[in-house]
Image 1 (cartoon, one colour):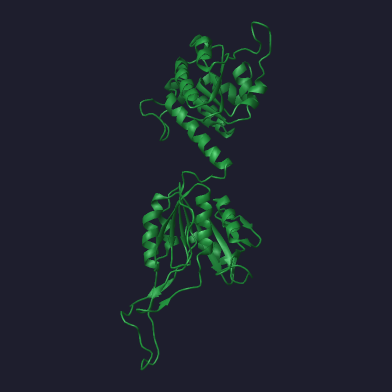
Image 2: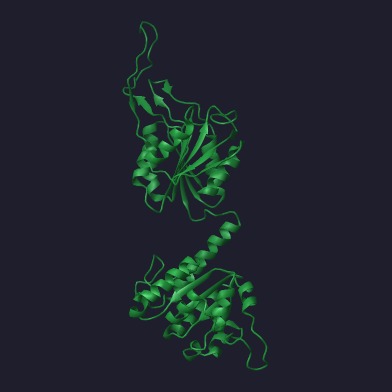
Length: 400
C-alpha cells in the first residue's frame, strides 16, 4: 500500500464518520489520500476533520470558494491508483450507474482511470429494493468492485446487509488488491496460489528387478513447476522416477514410483490446491501379481503377464474438482489427435488440455522442445509453434 494514491469519496450517510478510521488505516500503511465529498456528505462530517487526517484540502465543489480556481476531476482520475467510495448512498449509486454528473464526486468517478471500490451504505429496505440491486448490478458490469457488508471471507459478521462494511475490511480488500496487482506487474501473478503438478513416468514392477515404464524424462513437468514457482506459486510437485532436480525453493517435491503411489499423493494434495496440472505419463496398466524374486529366463518357456487397469488420476481429480479450482491435463497422441484429446477433456472434467503428438519432430519424450495445442472446455483452441519446454511452460501458465 505504500506510495499508493487513493481518492476517497464520501457521500451523505450516517456512516460517513467511519471514513476517518479508513483514512487512518490507509495513511498508516503509507498511502496518500485525497478526499472528495458530496455536499450532503459535509452535513455528516466536517471537511476540517478530513483535511487534518489527510494533510490535503478536501475537494467538494467544482470551484474553490476562496479564489475561484477550478478543481480538475480529470486530473484526479489520472492521479489515483484507486478510488474508494465509502460510504456510498443509494442516491450516489443511482447517479453513478446512470452517469448523472451533478457533483464533483460523480464527475471524478466518471473520469477515473483507476479501479473503483464501492462500499454501499443504506438501510436494509433501500438496499433490497429492485432499483438499488439493478444499480449495483450495472456498476458491477462496468467493472467496479462492490464491497458489501457480510459478504465474503473479509466481511464482518457484525454488520448486516446494506450497512457500510467496516473500515478494517475495506482496507483489507484494497490491500489484497494491490498485492495481487504488484505481483502481476512483477511477473508474480500466482502469488498466494498453490499448484499441484505431476511429472515424469511411473514404473510398474514385474519382479524384483524389472518394470513396465515409458520414455518420459519429466522435462515438461519440471519446467512447469519452475515456471509456476517463479511466478509466486507454492508448488506441490509429484515426480515419478526421473533424474531431474528442482531449483526454486517454493517447490515441494514428493517422489513416487508407481501409478498407485502417484494416485494416492495426487488425491491427497489436490483438495488443498488452487490448480492441478497433470503432466505425468502415468501407466494405464499395472501387473496383477509382482514376483518377489527375479524371474529366470531358463526353462520358463516364455513370460505371460496379467495386466489390470491403474487408477485414472485425471478422472479422479476431475470428479472432486471444486468450482474454485482449475484442472489441466496433457494428451500425448499418435493418431486422431484432436478427437482423442477433446474426448479426454470432456470425460475428465478438465478446464483445458495440452495436446502434443509423437508425430511432430522435436515434440514428445526426451526432447528439450515441444509443440502444443491448448484445447479448452468451451471448444476453442490455441496453437503454438515449436518452442523450448521452458517457453511452453510459460505459455501454459499464462492461460491458467
